[in-house]
Image 1 (cartoon, rainbow, N blue to C red):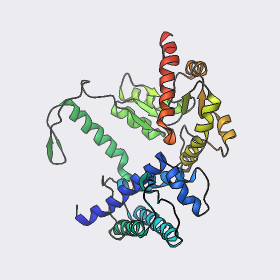
Image 2 (image 1 turned 45 degrees about the vertical axis):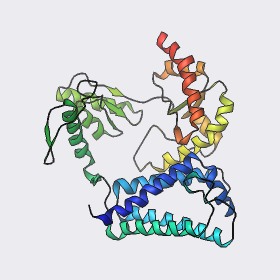
Image 3 (image 1 turned 180 degrees about the horizontal axis):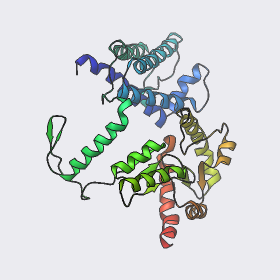
Image 4 (image 1 turned 30 degrees about the vertical axis):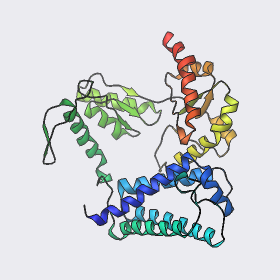
Length: 336
């Protein structure tokens, strides 16, 4: 890989880190956005998510379109900082979650320079780091499952012209459990062909039926599926109303982002049309429950998705839920 190809990756990596800092500390960016009249408390979080998605996509997939988006984000932020600098605004630039960095020419030039690095990716159409052809993602997945199985077996094997030996060996003989995820019939058939469990992306029982039929056709015995059911997020609380007030806005943003990723004909367990906190809570996709309610839910649907850091939740709030689940829910489930 030429040195020139590496420069856009630096720009995308910095964008990814900057986005993560906004998600983790959205208040540091709120002051900057407030100066230009953007006062929504969710705006810094949404901006951070956009930076994470664009930065990660550019790193993985590459191509002039994604590098163009990275460049545009840096240019937009440089223009914003230039405006604030010209108006002598007394705010921090919010860079990487820090309040101690004042707005100034240095920050404007840094963003313009980083935009230049990303623009190199536009000009030469820098590929993604993994160099993978998305149109071949099915065959590539099957190839790499085979590679993992060989690697975990501990014996030397050939891979793309090199002899590979992996050490140390996994604690579990043969390696940890693998499952194939997916939401379409091709995914179910691929899981059966590989002799692996199917982890479905939505709660359509037809996927399980397709999987079992393919297993039977291939003579694969013991295949099983995980078909999700119930809410996709559960938070256990001793005061659901108090915690919903903190979780609800983040859940609404999370649902909106998930909805934006759904292409035509695609389905997933997270399928929300809510535009208000009231509607979101009525849908039941995101639930804040007492320990008693959580036990009842588990007995009803037989699965539970906690997702403790959903959408960048405060880790302290997440730990409180996990600890309450451990102390007040799990023992009762184990007793039955």
